[in-house]
Image 1 (cartoon, rainbow, N blue to C red):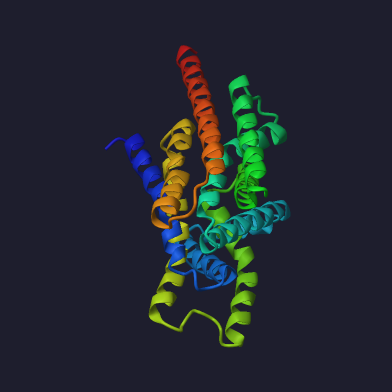
Image 2: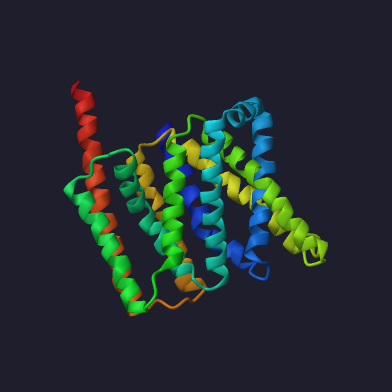
Length: 298
């Protein structure tokens, strides 16, 4: 099997896990989101730390946390990803999974905008139009529903800023994510102590919930490792295309399985977002082809 094929399969597996993860967190909707997040953080750290130990790279983690600049960047990344996780889990529990999927559809366009602002990355006319169309979709949904789609906006911007910070880190994804959850672990321990001190902690009350909470670490870590594996073997354009599986599966789960409402205003906004993504993706693929031709000619 070619390396590119392995990369695509890994990316498909990653997006499938992410896209269907709402079903998993729906099974825990009787547990407060902050408690689920605390378990997700701690079990993720245990899993990632074991991976680094097996790889013999635990010393890299110590070196990363020894540099003040890295700690500040990783700390901000930890804040962004924990916000993203918390809002996503909450959206599943309060019946807003449709809006969560909208957030992950918007994310690529938010990332493009942040890249243009932070790194002065030039945007073509098609890409600018796509970003403007996405913004119009959000405004349309806000007018139609009478309230901004806060969940979608928080998910898109938090993940966008998370990606922005990760781009400035020199360490690999496994090391950086391990550092992130390590920095969050004291807070997670404090949250769990608070829940268990008055006898309301979910872990240990029954085997079903305990197993699901512990497995959240593997559910978090495995797709990130597969994502890292995939990005080393396929082009970024391919990564971007396959990544649309994630919000698409989230959307299908929300509408078909969770039976969430999909109003006329949602239909208009989603139609505009899908159109924006089609325009953006087509422009990106053309740029990718031009760049590869230039490399071949040189």
